Image 1 (cartoon, rainbow, N blue to C red):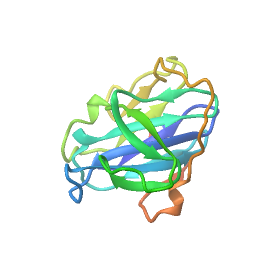
Image 2: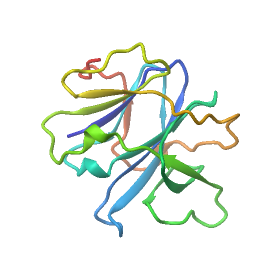
Image 3: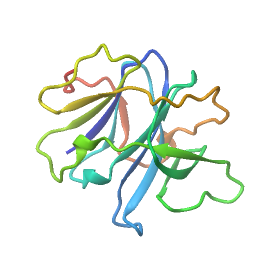
Length: 168
């Protein structure tokens, strides 16, 4: 079951995700930065995975943050590493709080899942549970002090496209 993140804001979003990774101990990895343009959708996972381990963090250049209370160190450049791994030497890192979307707690769910990052609550929620609108957290950055490398530099299954199959 693929997981998508949609940017329904007028701003470029920088997104990092935490996910189930059998190659890590504990079995949790982190990957970023996906640059998600306004009105586009990024697929951050494809196939079957244990989504109860899924976490996300997103921010824009205007201080909006979508996150939570599960903290880890993340490099400013593109990364794909284990959750508890330290940042490489001579690399700038930031301690960021990732959020867990509760409705992803299923293994091998039959349909795609979509996190729709929005700025206002005027959008309606899906009755089918296929997508979930997510508002920014109450924490706001005064200004973004760090840059974000783009995940496209890594070999990953991430794609950025206009989503034709994701219905809001």
